[in-house]
Image (cartoon, rainbow, N blue to C red; front, side, top):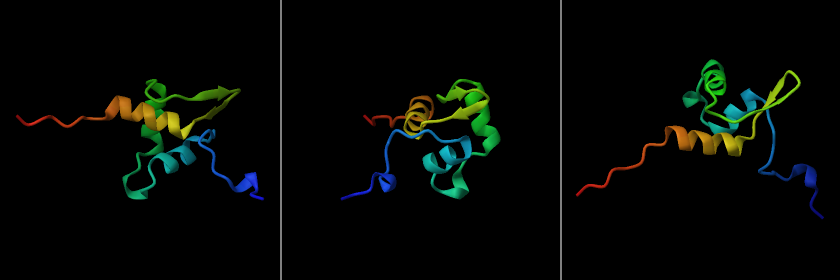
Amino acid sequence: MVSTMHMHTNKQLVGAIECIAIVFPCETSRPALRTYRKWQANGWIPHLKVGHLTYFDPDQVRAALDRRFKINAVEVR
């Protein structure tokens, strides 16, 4: 029997620092927390407010960053 405590789920809510670590696994290329908070304030990444706490779904954040910042390749003719 597999314990559900150790299974990774795609639907998780985490804080800003943990979300940055999940979405940007390479420490040297992560945006700063200040940049991440600016994206949040600009409405570029989705978040949930519960009282004074802010939570993020890393999958939704990644999708939002893809929509906002992704540059598609140009076809060469």
